[in-house]
Length: 400
Ligand SMILES: [Zn+2]
Image 1 (cartoon, helix red, strand yellow):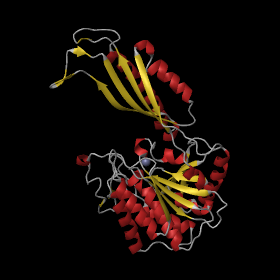
Image 2 (cartoon, protein in one colour; image 1 turned 90 degrees about the vertical axis):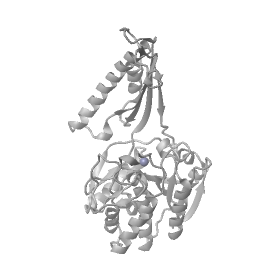
Image 3 (cartoon, helix red, strand yellow; image 1 turned 120 degrees about the vertical axis):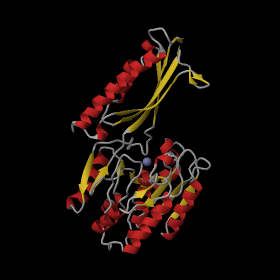
Image 4 (cartoon, protein in one colour; image 1 turned 135 degrees about the vertical axis):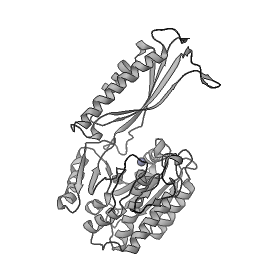
């Protein structure tokens, strides 16, 4: 079994073999032969080699690739472009009892950009090193999951398994830039309504060891841009209320907050998913000159952008208050904008994507399987519809 290692680099090692072993645990299918294993890996590599990085993902190729795989599995296929050039591929394995609500396994096809010069191997080469590690952008986020869905279906089909509920697989575009032209439009559509989805499995994180980690929620991203303005001034003078000074006061305050949250994680008092993370994404200031920046001028505007992630247990109003009063107060000539990724409603009674925590599941443990079922039942009662599960295969036979 391969392990995730070296988090410093932008590559991953994927657990395709792990998935195979899960299947053998949950379903009486034989372990894949050496030949089958290498086919699984090749298919995965093929997907990784399609450059679907933002801002210009090759959706044509990824769509074709997914459709070819779907055909080999005799799945029903549908390609929808709510926005031209941004295809959603929906695959269906019809269940034996069509009166039952369905299961949706979602993954996104796009990946974040990469700086290939900083990679040990080309980000779209899907190189396998001598330890079996696969290097590629999107290998973790989240082409591995999309492929695990496919391989799970392949093995379940090969074993003669027939689901009672219909199983859908969706491959959606543009998740990395907010999902507005992808999943968001699907969730608002009649197509989605007609799918009658009861449970969705989506993205998680790879496991750095041999435990199966189950994620059942997601923090909400807030993208905050704070802007400071002030009178421009000569670089030799000390002024109060300059744009840079005001921005720095805010950055210091945000940094203190960030440290306080991080301390909770470091002390083991809270999990990473239970605190508000704040990371600076950009700083924009200065008066450009032909050779760089004007050095003897205090600029009249300065901006900084932050990626903030908020657990559902946190009171969003208090954070809004903090932003307005401490991080970008009008009293310091500051303004701010927050882009919140909408928690759109999938069904009236099931609203918003939330985290309640996480649990580590152990391979081979009988309780693991029941943990999945029990949590499904209790979370469902608490309106938690979306699961973010790394090793969903473990759960499919339980839920179906
Ligand atoms: Zn992702």
